[in-house]
Image 1 (cartoon, rainbow, N blue to C red):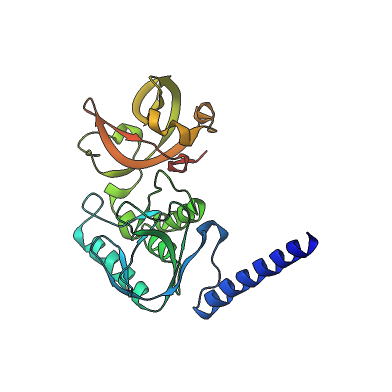
Image 2 (cartoon, one colour):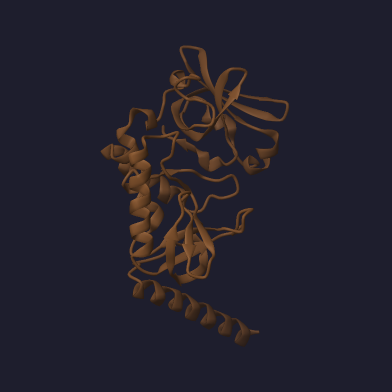
Length: 265
């Protein structure tokens, strides 16, 4: 038994050393634990699709998980073109190591990954304001790191953050005109109440006793929040993000992952 444990430990250290040596040889200082295990080492990217998918030399497609590139809903075309140019330059500059956590593929068999070349692709785009954090319902890897990179770009008001339309909105600014259905928005505000009904959770924002915006958690998404204390949000300023939906003529954001909520103070 002791021999088995010893052998297992030696093998684990050897694998870790191989991953680290490969990363160092590629110019990567480190791959954070949050990024998951190496899925493809030293891959060659041959082109970048218009949707941001990275096409590898063997034909496989990789999507960068955890970010949303500029598009029609958050900025002029030049920003989308600038993001694509920067991503293409980084992706084609040399081999890219991709890491992934389960579920590793989307419905189209594209690999959902974090990408590491000479830079961590996701954070490099975020720090230049050429992407925003967008956490998928079934993922949360490296969310704090991604948010931190985004905050640096927002502080410098660079890229998408130079646009007033991309800035986090106050709850009272969330009108159908300012936040059309289908757009991706960030909302900063104080939580006044939290309600529960029909299996849903209603996180109500407002001021002076008036509700001005609501973020909801649908019944099918409650499982992701099974250990989340919604009442702890009351009287705190938080930021939520996601795609806007229309509910009886009023915009709202449906939350499917606790990582869509940032407690600000």
